[in-house]
Image (cartoon, rainbow, N blue to C red; front, side, top):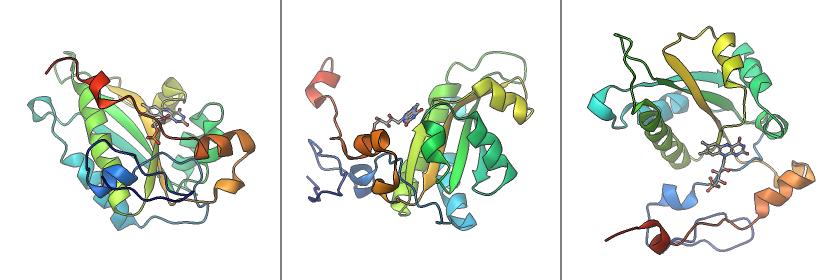
Length: 196
Ligand SMILES: Cc1cc2nc3c(=O)[nH]c(=O)nc-3n(C[C@H](O)[C@H](O)[C@H](O)COP(=O)(O)O)c2cc1C
C-alpha cells in the first residue's frame, strides 16, 4: 500500500497497491490562480484521452480546451453553476467534455457517454502524472454551452474538467475549505463486487 502521511496528503488509503497517479489523484478546488499549464502538457493529457478504448473504436469524445484568460474560458466559466463558479476560475484550463451520441446516419451511439468518461479518466490520470490536478464537474448549464459554442446537434456536452496546479487551501471560502480537508471516503471493495 502506498501511503503518504501528513495533514496535506490527500492520497487514497487503498486496499491494494495502485500506481502512483491513481493513489495521488484527487479533486481539489484550490488552484494556483497564477500557474500556467504549457501547451505541450495540455497536448499530452489530450493524447492520453485519445488513446482510450471505445466501442467499435468510434472515439466519440470531443473537447473544448479553454485556457484561463481566453474568451472561451470566460464562456465556459460563465456556464458553471453554484459554487463551481467560485473556485474554478483559478484553474489553468477548463476542458469541456463532449460526446458524439449520434452517428453519421442519425443512429444512436449508446456507448458514447461511457467512452467519453473513459477518455476523461485517461486524461485525469495522465494529468496527475504530469504534476497537475483535475476536478470534474457536472454542475453547469449544458444547453447554454452547446448554444454558446454552436455545437452540432449530434454532440452532447456531458461534463467539464478543471485542470491546474494545486493552490492554497486557505484561500478558499470556508465551506469549500472544509470540503477540501474532509476525509476522502470510498465504499469497501467487498461491497462493490456483487459476485465472484
Ligand atoms: C461526473 C462528475 C461530476 C462532478 N460534478 C462536480 C461538481 O459539479 N462540482 C464539484 O465540486 N465536484 C464535482 N465532482 C467531483 C466529485 O464530487 C469527486 O470526484 C468525488 O467526491 C470524489 O472525490 P475525489 O475525486 O477527490 O476522489 C464531479 C465528479 C464527476 C466524476
